[in-house]
Image (cartoon, rainbow, N blue to C red):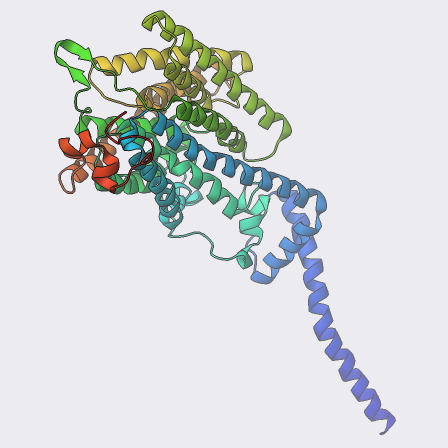
Length: 479
């Protein structure tokens, strides 16, 4: 082998190694430079697949930024779990405040709601509620079906704060918001309990959670026209609770009261729930879940804001409970546990719109007023013969409206005005009530929405499911 041949081979080897190594080195350097440019400017340019991967790798290597992102993301995942627990709370509360012969039906509806709510939100709801900047200021948006399908897609746009816009991944965002989605239909479930036809309710819940909730949610949280107008609803006094309340009111008006609830001469026959222990457990589970509902709505693990929100939330809940107990004792001449429990929920719903902007002292006042409102409202709805077995209208609709308006009265942000808050309440309420009324009417005149009088008397557990919740303990016909 000649010296010239050896030299040629060495030259070719060097060229080959350079061709392999230099692009890798260039990619690393390019990723670091792009990452620095993005963090300095706050703007993400259009990136190729290689650039995206390089910038994402540079972000992960930035321990300060990636550790903060990880902590924030973890807190929102935990908060999503707390909101999920709320569905158990709703189911337990609703079961306790209704008759034992309808227990299986109550639990079945709540099982259906959380499952179908999450699935519809996955299929299209998430992208209706958050369709992107192209629909900013609008009334409706949609960016396609489904969510990103694989962790291999994780990159700048889906899993970094400067790309996705939040300190969480797109999957965490979906999970947290998806837990909220089903809540609206859960509120309707309690209000129509003990006489609603299962198939009609199931169809309604799919349409209500799949269409009504994401549309109004987009108006504010997705950057729609209410966001542009300056309307404020931190965690959903209107966008979750009042939406459920308006849907419940529309359904009740077409459904009618339970048989024997309203007697001649304007008398009201109490239909007592079968388990106050279950109701108590349900409310305490809901209070626990509200730490995720409101605390997670900070959308980060900011130590000051999260702790502040949890305090305003708890103060309002406690004040609502005490206020409802005192108010009901004065009006009804007896201390009523169910009113006290609903007072806690009233305080929670009331503070939800402004938990991050209402001072702690004013959160106390919000809870006190909500607790009194829920008692007066329950009595009022009975007087006008609107039958709501669990007080859902009073808790979620009335106190949801109050809490949203309270932002305009007590917020530390002067941009939050009463008139803007009133506009938001009116827009969401009008659309939701009309849409829910139309959906309920559709179900009523197709599959039906009410069981027969015989099924209602026997109990929906046997009539709809052929099961008993307490088969070994008591007759299904006894309370």
